[in-house]
Image 1 (cartoon, rainbow, N blue to C red):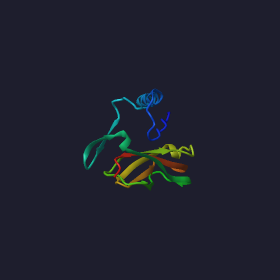
Image 2 (cartoon, one colour):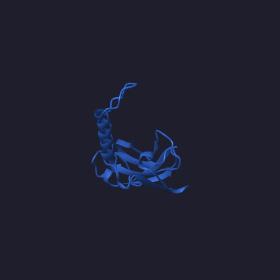
Image 3 (tube, rainbow, N blue to C red):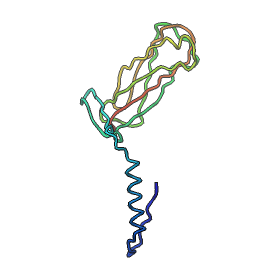
Image 4 (cartoon, rainbow, N blue to C red):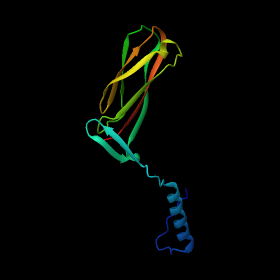
Length: 147
C-alpha cells in the first residue's frame, strides 16, 4: 500500500498532494473488508454467547506429544495437558484431534476426551482401543476472548 509523504510545515497543499491523499484513502478502502461477518460469536459456559470483533478474538493452535514409539495396551489411558501462552477472559472453546504420526494400527484406534478447560489450560485423556506400538500427538485448537 502506498504511503503519503508528510507535508513540510507551511507547504502549500497542491493538487498533486491532495490526489495522493485521495488515492491512498481509496487503497485503504479496497483493502478493508466490507463483509458482514467481521464478528465472531463464542458461546462460553460461564457467560453465554459473546460477540466480539474477529480481530479481538484469539485463536491458538498447538499440539501435545502423547506417545513416541511407545507400546500401549488396549483399554489403557494417558493424560495430557496444554498450557496457553496467554490467559482468556472466559474458558475458551477447545477441540482436540488425535494424529497417528506413526501410521500404525494401534494409532488408528484411539479416543481423545477433554476433561477440563480453564482460562489458561486444557487437560484431557487419550484412550487406547488396541494394543501395539504407536507415535501419537494431539492437535489442539482454542478459540476465545483474551483478557
